[in-house]
Length: 119
Length: 136
Image 1 (spheres, rainbow over the protein chains, first blue to last red):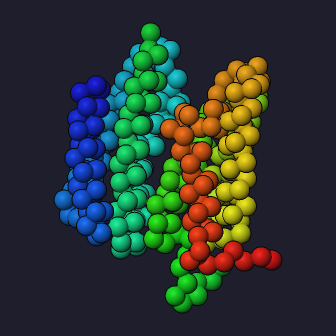
Image 2: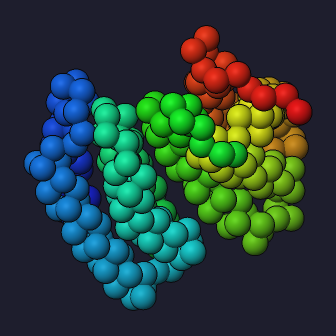
């Protein structure tokens, strides 16, 4: 899971960089940013399945409900941000995507913290 | 709230970002409060305050997203009072806070976003070029 978390972290930095360029240039998110978001969502799906397998197996001491909450919640944030930003054809729409992307590492750290209570 | 031609909604422009940030906090606080209610007796005061914070964020998100300016203003003022009051209380009356609440220590668990957000919200609603908040 750590390898995946780092991979997602690198992808977050790259996609955030592309979005920041789009915001500075005052435009709606570029195609490059879109495919970056698709790649991130795919990574989050892998994280979901991986986390599910971990938690179905031995999870002594890990609070299961919050752990599942973060796994599932992480899947929804990008699609919701995409829909919410779609009708805003300005840099603000792009900024919504940036906020969503920057929330992902926070969720990653929380998942890691929750799993670290595993004994 | 009907959309008058040319009238900008609180959910347009920068408001898109603001509503999304409020939505993320509403989602986070609701998830947290729901989990805390399952172990409510461990720390009733902070857990009840978490539920209150969740409710305030839900109302603020909905009001800003649907251009209900007076509801949004009331929710954000309540939010500001709440985060300040709970922030101070959590530092002073530590015996009442055996566990943290959403607004404990001025929202430190959320990178102090809960402390900054009401000020941004007030600016967005009350800035000089905003539509006036309708009084009923």
